[in-house]
Amino acid sequence: MYVRVLQIKFPNELAKNSVNALSRDMTKEFFKSGLLLRFNTDTSPNSLMITLLWEKKELFEIARKKYGDKFVAEVKEMGGIVTISDGLSEIDRAKEIDLSKFNEF
Image (cartoon, rainbow, N blue to C red):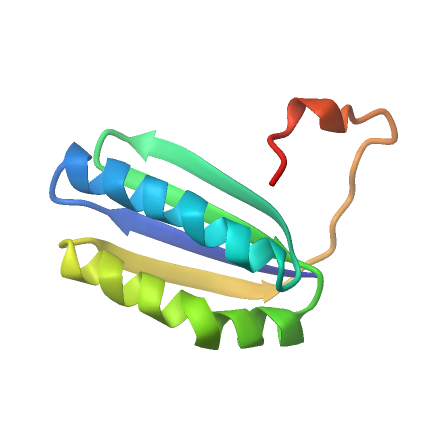
């Protein structure tokens, strides 16, 4: 598994809300390209953390080149300051997890 985390600070809440909506639209394309899960976390009124779980790094790289680099550029154009962390990840989950509580695309 492969995880990418984008921490974004915005000049205002409107910019954050716009990027949150853009992220959700982009996710639809990413799911077609090997994305397994996306978490958008409001860490403050002007900050957002986006966590993406990919099946494997190779699929992430293809999607990043096709969509991800453009997304980061658009966030920066809106005044967002982007910090990116990523790497191979080991994932554990509870056997009893109820997936019906997750949004599906």
